[in-house]
Image (tube, rainbow, N blue to C red):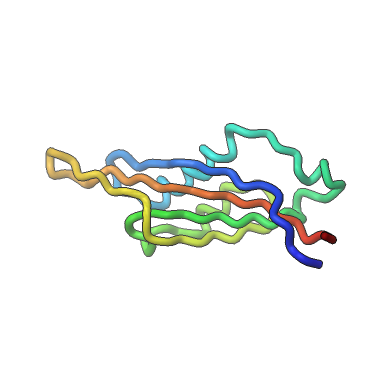
Length: 114
């Protein structure tokens, strides 16, 4: 069956002092999820485990994101995390580690007939 995207949510996360790109990504996922209560699985008579969840993460240092930790934020579904260059690092005037900002897009799909 073809894959049909039904929902896209956006989020933003940050790591203020530790320059932790994984933490910023996880906070961005939580930001996108915790502001919504969307019951897609129930709406379509499907199991939550059937949800195909694609997470796009954009940070300045993509190689520093632990995709397994980001995926574990989701309590169910089949999660794929894709990381690319983006986001924003903001230098600190005191010379410390920059503030890290992550942009997140979450897409939820099901395999279903047209």
